[in-house]
Image (tube, rainbow, N blue to C red):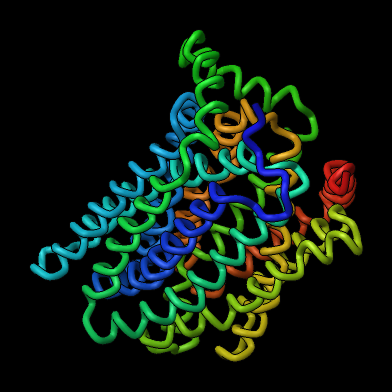
Length: 415
C-alpha cells in the first residue's frame, strides 16, 4: 500500500512536519543570535568564540553515521519528538543557569554540543521522512517550503526578536527557545502515524537482521562506490570547511569591526537573510527555467565569492547587501542539493547514507571553525578573506561537475 501523497497538496503528514519546522526554526533563530551574544559577554577570546560554532557541528563528525542508522531502524516520528524534548530540557537549563548567574562559557559550550547532537537526529529523521511521505515530483516543492520556513522564521522573526529580547533581559530568548522546542515536539507527535508506519516498519524489520557495525560499514561503502555521490560529498565537504572557517568569529567581526550594537545584530541577520526568502520562492522557478544544474553551479559560485567580499566590506550597509546576495544564492543551492540527494539515495537507505555524507560534510566544520578562531587572532577580517577565496576556487573547479549532476537528477521530475 502506497504511503506517499499523490495530489498537488502535500498532505497531513507533511503539514505537521512543516508546522514543527516553523516552530523549531523560531527557536533556532532565537538561539542563533542569543548564544553568540551571550558568549561574547562571557569571553572575548576568538578561539573560545569559534568553539561555539565548532561545538554545534562536532556531533555531525562524531555521531552522524550511527544516528543515521538509528533513523533507518527507528520510528522517525517518535525520534524527532524525543530529540526535540531533549533540546527543550537543555535550553531550559541554560535559561536557569543565566537566571541564577551560574552560566559560564564552558556550560554554554556543553549545552551547544547537546543541542547540536539532538539536531543531528532531528534533521536526519525529518529529511528521511520527505521521501517516505511524498512523491519525487513534490521533493523540490517540499524542500522549498521547508527552506522558506527556515529562512523567514529564523531570520525575520527569531533573529531580530532575539536581539531585542536579549537587550531587555538576557534570559528571555533562552526561555522562548526552550518552549519552542517543546511545541515542535508536540507537532511532530501529531503526524498521522498510519501514513508512515508501514514504510518504517518494513525498513526496520530488514535492518534489524543486520548488525549495527555492518550497516555503518555498508553506508560508508555505498558512499565510496557511488562515484557521483563521492565527488559531490568531497566538493561539499571542502566547501563546508572553508565556510565554517569564515563565519566562526563573525559575531566579533560584526560587533567590533562593523560596530553593530548587540540589539541590532538580529536585525542585520534578518536583512541579509531576506535574500533567502526570495531564493526560497524563486528556486523552483529558476530550476524549471534554466535547469537544476545551471542554478546549482552558479549558486555555489556566488555564495562562495560573496564570503570574500563580506571580508572587505567597509561598513555594515555594504556587508548587509552582500549578505542578501549570499543568502539568496545559498538558498538556491541548499534546496536543489537536497533534491539531488533525495534522488541519488534510495529512500530505505537514506538515513545511514545521509548520515555518512554529513559525517564528512558537516564533520569538518568544527575543524574549520577552530582554524577560523586561530586565524582571527591576527585580524577579524582574515577568516572571511581566506575562507572566501578558498571556497571560490573550489566552486570554480567543480562547476562543470555540479552542472551535469544537477541536470541528471532532475530528469523525469515532471513525469
